[in-house]
Image 1 (cartoon, rainbow, N blue to C red):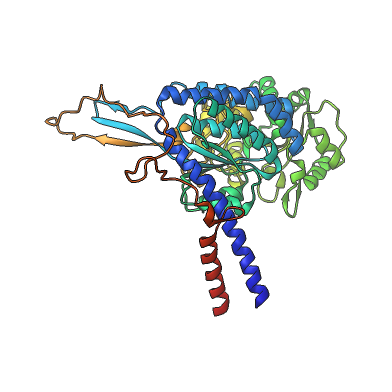
Image 2: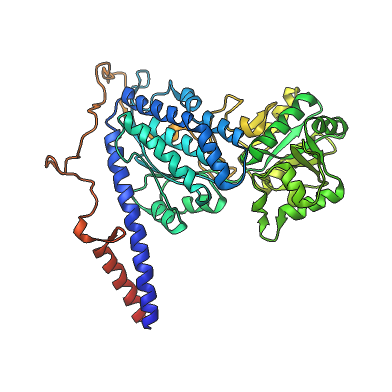
Length: 521
């Protein structure tokens, strides 16, 4: 009994410590969000531009650190992604105003922007810095505070990158603590942040388990499910361009973007020419025995072999016992069927592309649907065709909210190389059991209070030309119930906090409850 009580005390201490750490960071973020809300658009954009410039400046350095720490990916490609999630991202949204009211005189409505408040953002190991840049800049554009939780496999480079962006924000006048990062993330600590009522919204990018946990946290959450993009090469496609774009996409950063092509589907009349075209661009077509070796290496009883994530084609071929040329950029594995029994038709975050020849166009579209039913519903699909009807029929049939046409899918679906919104969190919508189907942007981190006048003609709409929000700038402290100089949001008194940030009264309460439960048992 005493041992059980000691264990419960230890568990309670640990839980209280984690909760205390989360509370301190979230309280600071909450205060920062209230100060940030007082910024006008010019002050806001100064912060945004300063952070974007810092992200651009650190793109190459943090690309190197991310590859060094994680062990996978391509430095040059990660640098490109880091740069694209800096100034180009801000440029895409520069004309959008998330600070000033919107006035619709015809409908007699005034809309006032209301930032979410405190964003808790999860970032993945596959695209750590680009996702971090992207989420921080979305928060800054909408005057939100953000707490970044990096994947443990890349926490060092993420902590350093977040510190650089936080410093840039502060230099531009942003409130302290508007950008924070967990230096030692763990599942219990992340759960405390996700479940805290002080978290306004969770922006989740990562594995399925983490995204599901975000949705189950009781807090609003925006997440993305797994990808498994089918790409259909139609008989009307320009095969030279199609093969070039597919190999470029599938080899980009060793295919760690979840928008990469997973299964290529084509037609009998296209097959021989497409094979030759792909081979000319650096694709190695596996023989039947090589495909089996690749299948055994990539998939096992526990699922996909994580050692293969982000590795280059030569490394994977060597591990699987396949001999390839040094110039090989991707491995192509022909498969005769698509479904749960064919593991190669599942998502593969590495430069391995499954290849299937359908009997005709209707069957090809049906097989593309099957790929997305297996995994990746609502996520991404691609088509190469000059026949508009073929492209349209494909897009109408597949359960995907992004269909990239005649472009590299990895980059195109994320808004780079197409005019889709640049994003590292793509909504999977109703098909993927999510509430948002488009690429996530700043518009999803701000809601609008609407002043709606009577629609009767006899009720005149007000004149709002001279009316504006009161942007009073930052305050050193917030008023507390009309008492000047008192801070409403402050950390617990030092005398009541144990080492490690544990609130003693809270700890006593938890321990007492646990002990009562044990004694009753």
